[in-house]
Length: 259
Image 1 (tube, rainbow, N blue to C red):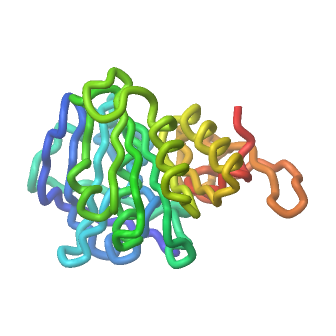
Image 2: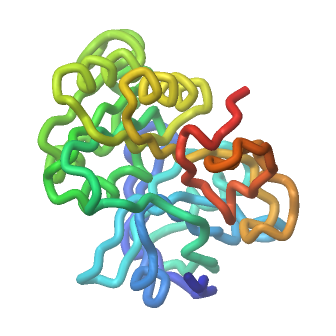
């Protein structure tokens, strides 16, 4: 799938909480060709390296792409300082995203923290067949719960301090959902320890599982080796390095060599 470089206008900007922001970008060709689980590479001021931001939602009627991100460094701090009406230099869509939407009838989407936004467009593609399990540190850090409620049958919430939903990790919440619903697939995004636990859960219940990995990216197009990760070939079991930005960020959980 081709990638495009466009000047994208910021159509709207919202502060969700703290240093977490929600932008709607005029996408043009990017919006037309984007799919769930892909990402955009955004130039942030004079920084040499672009910043990868996951696609949260695709608004076909407006030819726009929604992104949700939090401030983690100078680049994203610059991005958070942009205002409605400004233009961003955007390259995308990039990477291999989620797919196989017609194959499953009872999928469970599992998102931890900033792993929730990349799953929203995925939820839309399942047309109400998916349930979601979302985990956050506390009630103040929750996001997109109403959005997921529009597109999912059920939305399970877990917070580490018990201030909203179930008390504990999202993996505990997900286990209960898997046991009660007989899920036939898992789509997950979040920190590596969470994804490793989700992969183990899928293996235990023999469920197909797709995970979106996070790695530091240099170029975003597979030209450098910054985001290389160890995987195994699903057919012969041979190990090999693959690029998260190009071959991923979505992989089958059984292909990933977990740390």
